Image (cartoon, rainbow, N blue to C red; front, side, top):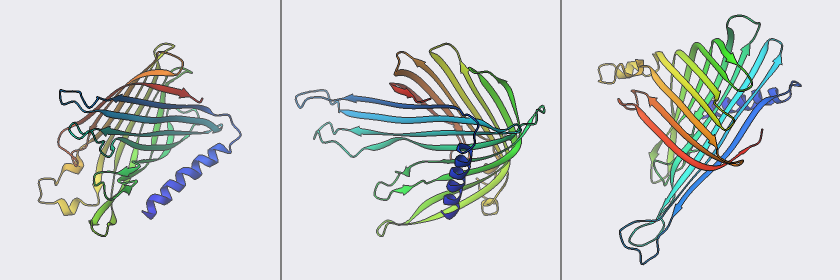
Amino acid sequence: MRNLLVAITMLLVIGLCAVLSAEPWSKSLDLNFTMTQNSYSDSWTGGEAGSISWVSNANGVFQKQMSPKFNFKNTTKLSFGQTHIQDKDTKQWAKPVKSTDLIDIENLGKYTPGWLVDPYVSLRLETQFFDGSYSKIKRYFSPAKLTESAGLARTITKTPENEISTRLGFATRQIFTSIIVDTLDKKTETKSTNDGGIESVTDMKLTLSKTLGFTSKLSLYKALFYSKSKELKGTPQENYWKMVDVNWENQLSAAVAKYVTVSLYAQLLYDKEITKRGRFKETLALGLTYKMF
């Protein structure tokens, strides 16, 4: 947990140093809130139950040229949502269940001397506000994944409306997980693993029209070493950590009014250490969106 707090502090310090720079920001920050609700009277027949679902999102990109040869970029994604369900027989509302939970903060620094490719370093934190798998014990910021990487990056195209960039480098990861060791005393302990390997990240931002935008991020990771590899020898999971991890996010957004946006979000995940099958998430939402920048 101490290492996690140090990493969060580093992210904040790096961001603060960028803020103090005199150069102007290239920035965007979108705040989004969606909610669906349905209810039924006591005399309603058919077995339906009322429900309320809500999701709040904050997506920000802050970038500036700190000096003629150094570029800084911060990408922040925050998301949280819950679902409330009414018992169809008693009509009592159950405790809310978490439906969406994400904290994703990345700081990327690039050396920009004008070469064909730009050397880069990055620090990324991926976690959630809390682990709700056991409702009686809230485990905040668990699991948390820290990724440090360095390599070469290239901006394929960049205009005020569109940007496509890719980078390839070596990365190390630390994963911190809060484990419940005693449910009666509500005791937990933090366990960690680490690995290192090759990372590839491709980002795409396209403005398809005045009201239609598309963003995509494809992250690939191939581990070359793993701290728990010896413990897995002789088990069916012995080589699972060697498989390529995939995280592919896509979002299509359409502004139907000044503060109303329809968005379609799709995410494909693959990590054989978690499950042998790919995981897919799709969200179609109509909600209020406020662009601060």
